[in-house]
Image (tube, rainbow, N blue to C red; front, side, top):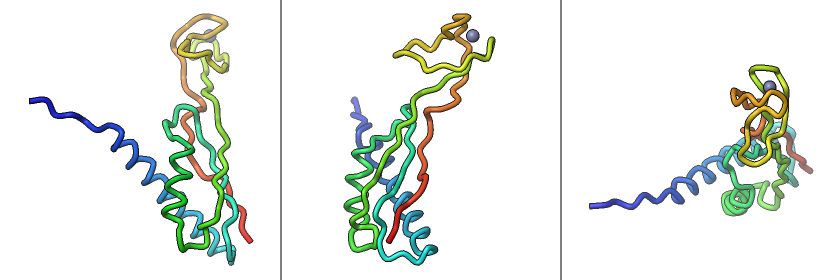
Length: 125
Ligand SMILES: [Zn+2]
């Protein structure tokens, strides 16, 4: 008998665990800085990271309750997919679903940006 796979649940867990890591790192850094309040958390998200910014914000609001980060805003810097041709070394931003090199049309490319998901800095009081 078929067993449905709830891929959306896996997704949700993925984002929730990323949010937990972001929050715990932000709280550590705020404590090191002797901060009373975390105002903003600046994150870098690659287009290919598969992470949805709105989900992170939603989980953050729940997880950060009763911590010094409870009013913090998450700010996202989106990084576009950037590819490099292995044949001619051309670096380019691919149009949708067309990852071939615009110069030599070779499809042997390397992803050099777009998979990022990290915290760049925090702003505290
Ligand atoms: Zn090329």
